[in-house]
Structure formats: C-alpha cells, structure tokens
Image (cartoon, rainbow, N blue to C red; front, top):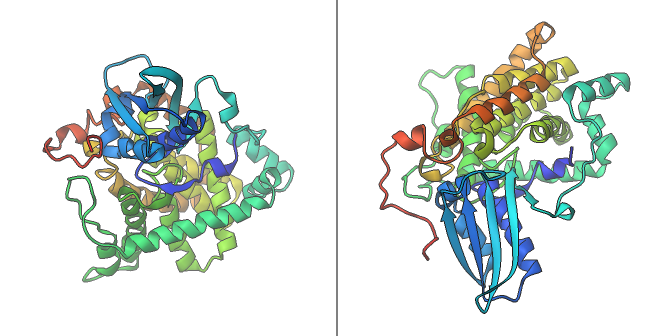
Length: 410
C-alpha cells in the first residue's frame, strides 16, 4: 500500500477522478511538451459521459493554459482498461509530437500507461486487515502506531494539515449561502441545517442535524469547486470530517486524538483502494460513499479507544450496508444525490460505531471479505449505474438539456 498522503489529498472539487486526476495528468504532460501549438485530449466512457457536469473540460483547460486545448468526448469506444481513460496529444504544425494515455483511478490518483516512474511506490508491506491486525496484536500496537512505524513521525504534520483543511471546509461551507453552480438550482443547505432547530428537539435530533450540517458543508464546498480533502474521494469528502468534528466538539478530543483517528481511517481507505477500488466509475458509489463510511466508522472507533476487533467490525458494517449503491449523478454533477449521501453516510458511521461497541465479538464477516465483496459487486453492476449518468436518478430526473454550465465551448 502507498502512503496515506496519496489517499488524503488537499485540492479543489468537485471530483477527484474527473477533475483532480485529469488536471494532474495535464500538468505532467505540459511539462513534457510545453512548446506546442495546441493539445488534443480525448475523454472516454465515464469521463466523456459526465465530464461536462464534473467540469473536467474546465480543469484541463486551466491546467494547460494558455495553450489552446481541443477536447473530444468519446462516448462510444468500448473495451478500455479503465472507465476513466483519457488520451493526451501534443500537436505542432498539425503534426503529432507527443502522446500519453492516462487512467484516473480514483481519489485524484492516476496511472500513466507505460510509465512506472509516475507512480508512487508501496511503503506498507502488509496489504490486508487480517495481516495488519495480527501484526498490531503481536507488537502491542494500535493501528495509528503502525502508521507511524511505517511512515515516520512526519505523517502527523501532514495529517495535521489535512485536519485543518477539513475544519476549514466545514467552516466555509457553514458560512456560505446561495445556489450551487450547474443549472440544477440547488440551494446550499448546511447553514440552514445548523441554525434551524426542531420545535421539540431531542439530543438525538440535534446530533443528526449537526452531523448532517457538517457533511453538507464540505460537500457543498466541493460541489462549488472549493478546497476539500479527498476522504477517500471528492464526492465522499464530507463523511469523515463531519463525524470527527462533531465528536471532537461533543467529547473534547484533542487534535492529536483526531489525527490518530485519521490515520486509522486512512488504513481502511488504503486497504479498499489497494484491494478493490474507490472509483465510482469502476464500482459505483459503494466504492466512494461506502469507503468513506468505513473510514469514518473506523476513525471513530479509534477515537473512543476501541479494540482492533471493534475497529474492524465498525468498518465492515459500514461497508456491508452500502453494497450495491449506484453512482447516478444527475447531469453528471456531484450534487444530486451525492451531497445528501454524505450526510446519510455520516449518520450511518455513528450507528456502526454503536453496533461495534456491543457486537464485535459475534461477527462472521471480516473486513477483507467485505472489500472483496464490494469489488465483485462493482464488477457485476450494470455499466450505466457507474458514474455515466445513464441510469438511476440521473435517468429518471427530468433535465433541461438547454441548461449547460460547462466551459467546453467557451
């Protein structure tokens, strides 16, 4: 497995695989071929079908400016190695002077065909929860201590930056009102959720309202191209910060406690990314929101000092009950149903923590098993339910095709 720095990335939304990954690839390609007349980029499959809604075109043009960019949306080519495939071509005097094929594999990570030098090396020798748990038991370590052993003390400086940005995204989202871009006329709801009390509000209602407000805040920032942290993706970025911010306020945990929890949640995300996928285009929203819920529940279990069996149970329950969740963004935008799903997953992470407190010793399903199940479920899922906007809510919702907020033709 790779460093947690490759899982938790600080960057602009709205999509880690559709904007962050392609923009990163574009920057690398521009460095290799800076002196050209124009670039031609072909987007395939999910990138082509939802690229306008995700603003992939805008992200590419910004990364390659001021050189002209011609973007081709290829929605028909089949048999690609990954649904988020894009081809870069550098053109000078109408001659091809360079090319590069890239796979945007989720969470802002990319793979460049034929270039191993562009990939980070693995630093974690253990690649299953079973192996990590056994190592931690044998050496009397908590998971966050295992992270420090592998990554070194500098990982805490990085995770401190991650936590600071998570809190900043919540604050900014709660402080901003108005309509999100894109033509769906979605009003921001985080401010409203935080500041409107129920007429007969119980402690449970207040908890749900507050956690949801925090999840909405980050997700709305993401949808508005704000700066967030992939946890593990942009589209699922609201879950982990929402539950950790709420629990810090409720129980008074220190920032050190929180970043230790982030490390444990990060191991969960890394295991999913390594052994399955965190890409909605590859495995549906179970790979994004399901993974985020697992990360959040494991982080919470670490935060309250649960044992390693309870941490595993919390993560497993969180993922198990997201199995089969489709990725069906309306107009290809990270708004409906994505924002609301972050809030629901945040509440589910807290519920998973409660179950882990009582039932961990009775479990029959391992976390490794549920990762494998999620991946197989994703492979079996019909293509139009995997970030193509061709099925589910994206198909049923009546969209005005004349409303187009994309920069593609500008």
